[in-house]
Length: 238
Image 1 (spheres, one colour):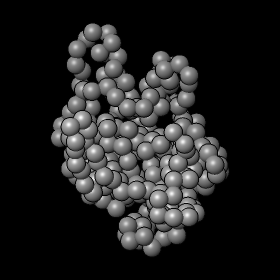
Image 2 (cartoon, one colour):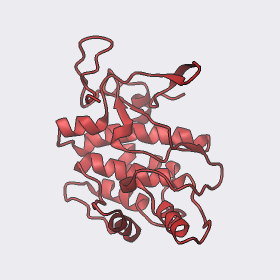
Image 3 (cartoon, rainbow, N blue to C red):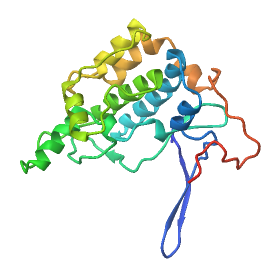
Image 4 (cartoon, rainbow, N blue to C red):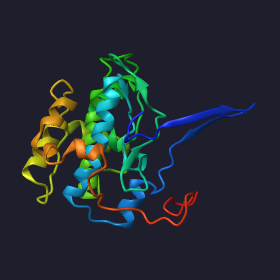
């Protein structure tokens, strides 16, 4: 249960299905919003990224790793704030796990290394921990501020090679503080990757008042226009 997570309100079942009743984030996906309104500023990206960070920080206190952070899984509510959704890959990980899963562009190097071992028939490696969400948080924030992720390729093997090499091009429009934070998160060694505590103390994150954010006292960069309580116009037709 968290301010910036799609919370489960109720559940029930029949003979064939389980039904989950979730918060309705009426503004649709961040992915759709970014394509309809390109050109998000770094300040706007920080507004959304700070909410994602607080959700991740909360999850990590319970040893939960999300493993699928991406713009498609950020939903916008009535007031323009976000809700982290889709816990299909989430898992309780007090120590390590070895499952290879997630969206390719967002995968941390340690997940890819584990996948390579699996495909080579080498059995289990060192596995990975909650640090993978901090990597994905950096990729997500970079994408929101730049409209595209730092690693892209149609061929998955080439994409994975880019991630493992971790040569990141930072746009000149990114501030020094923003680049510094990303450089401490986009590192292939999870041991030295910034933790949530270090991110919270970083100058780039301290530029936004997290307490005011939780209290919803900050004006959102965008507020969805809605016509009625069940308005679904901000979602792409299925």
